[in-house]
Length: 285
Length: 285
Image 1 (cartoon, rainbow over the protein chains, first blue to last red):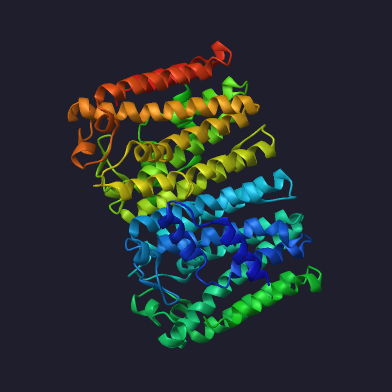
Image 2 (spheres, rainbow over the protein chains, first blue to last red):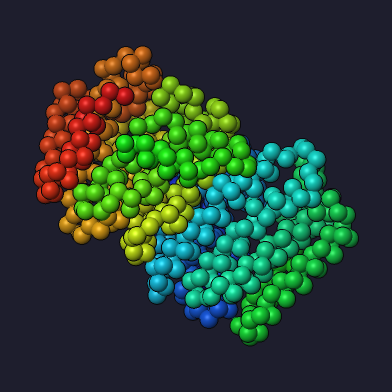
């Protein structure tokens, strides 16, 4: 239900228009049949602090736009040089490198424009604050920093601290910003924000640990991507650095901490956030 | 004086920090010894509607960050493939393609973050409105659209209408957004905004016409870039499409219209905006 609403909002946010090619490219990656975990998380964060989900949708779309931009740019030949993502050709493979760069740029700027112009029934002060949080999460100190350090670390021996830096900056911080953003939109107070920030930090890390474990334990066919690719290209992963058992144990600890943060909220309202943490812990793809 | 303030604000907006490489790359292009025409225009627009220049500086920095991002990405090998800009090696030549893409992304997101978090003494409502204007100017319908159409038109016969579309979208609209943004920050009313929007449209076009004229009349040494490059690569220019005399006449008409829009404002306060139009009409570099 929430995924359908997000899909509709994203579809409407980028209508097909001239120049066709760049809009097609933006829509190709944005509406690529993703499960919209981030936007659904956004809406749940807004609701747990008592906000209506309608307050959350523009920022939820923005988070998905930013995430998509980072995938499009990270897949470029000059970056990770990926031909496939979830079994589909990557953006530059279909539309060419120049269109892929520009589609990413357009998604990034649309994200901010969208929050600024489409958010309704939230005080402008909260909207400005939310935009600041989102901007910070993409910037040179965070998402971009993670990718830079990731690129620099390829083929090198990476410590656990460095690996955590990369994941926290490339993935975790955007989840954190998304959740914080929506706690602001939903009218949350400072304590709400801090509890949700910690929850988001745990599930962000959890997602990566589980993904790394899957990567070494599943076959290529099941994953619809090249299994073991991270190991082959000598990329650092949790199982490689701590062993598979320790990695599983770490995932369990993260899950427990996420649950603990949620116990602060009304149990019924927090149910979707429990569900998301579970979904991440068990994700098969 | 204004340029020094802008330089200081930009310098402070991106301190050198880890990861060093991406911050170095951002600073390299942002503080590349430009004359900061756009930020100075921003401050003048804020002042002509009665605002203090301090209200204008964060958005003025944002406009320069967006402009710099578009240059870095446009210069990439998959785009215009430029090795030099104003006699200096382009960003990807110095830092590599992947860092150049990421430095552009970081500048774009910093632009929005900077306006949201650094603007002081402006109502949040006006800040949100200004962010919406800026976002619109970069998006898939405008700046990105201009670059897409520009890339698609290379080597083809381009009509005057198409040429105007390209310039208006690649250059003009950002100037317009910059000026409108600052009229909003400065407390301007709707009529102020519309007069300034028209002024900005004229000088944006003027800038391009003058640049095109210069490109065919100056030697490579004077321009510090490859003179006649646009002609050689078969790029459409105003002199090529209308002849050099008609292009000069067109420049004169644009100048006259820009002056006319300014006559609505207090002459003393509008003086910097007159000066900028003159500067553009006579620019030698």
